Length: 351
DNA sequence: GCGATTTGACCCTT
DNA sequence: AAGGGTCAAATCGC
Image 1 (cartoon, rainbow, N blue to C red):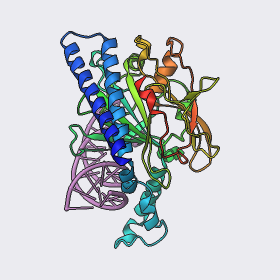
Image 2 (cartoon, rainbow, N blue to C red):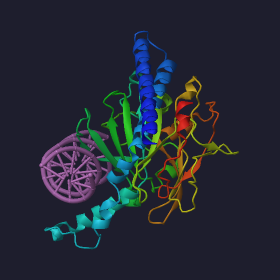
Image 3 (tube, rainbow, N blue to C red):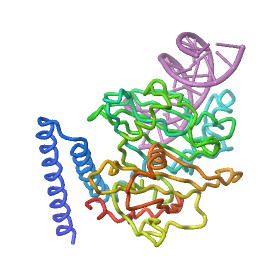
């Protein structure tokens, strides 16, 4: 059984790799003939689909190893107790830090993580991805091994005021400097987005400078794919990725989209509603997604609705003008109870 | 003066 | 030990 499936697996990899290479060639040729925005976008999406398909295949192909490797999540908790003896010499000195870091570390492991890739066109004079509607405060920057650009670390401005533990990391892509990969960790438990639709000015002055007035235009140009990555959410501790660049799940009568697996447990920490791609070639096919969270905070104190992500802004800004066939889809995902088998209908990547 | 950013140091995980 | 993530003092900008 192993040889046959392995062979098919390799064939699939080969085919996908070929397809991607050919798409890259096509992009190269198109570059010499000043392609239209729509063509660029289409190519981008094709390449993106190939990349994701390959990633998924490779990931699932090595799932057993990944499983045992179990990166970054969960494992330490069993060996380190919060109030126990950390075995550190300068325990007294660092007691507070240890406590805090244990706490945040623990929290972090529980936090749902998802990745957005945002491309921004330089014609707009924009230096980077858009404000996402939340107020962030930069707390660090780090050179990453093998990366051409440093990674910036942001946390919610209201971390201490409202005990909001949302963070994000922003890293410019090596391959395409116009692409920023934004990794969000944790959901906002602050209510900054509840106040008004126009968010406060972004604190992100280093990575990108833009006025709020520019945001709409930028958002208009923003293409993003959204990948949700809930790492270490159960005992399997397998990173779970699911992307939304195309149809990938069941859609119910209310145009809500549901992953194939049961994700609608009541125990959920939050509900996701990422979404929607119009496969058409019009401007509206810029991938857009929104995430509204109905979230019980980790402290169980709040029960709030949030609008999340740059993409959400696009959707809200253009909901009336886009002809996306999929409206306000919404599906709940339990970041804790997620099925690690990742049944999110991979076939959708090729539609 | 206050809040945000920078950046070196420290801590944690692998 | 290495690399990534976070802290916090110093600095910057309004």
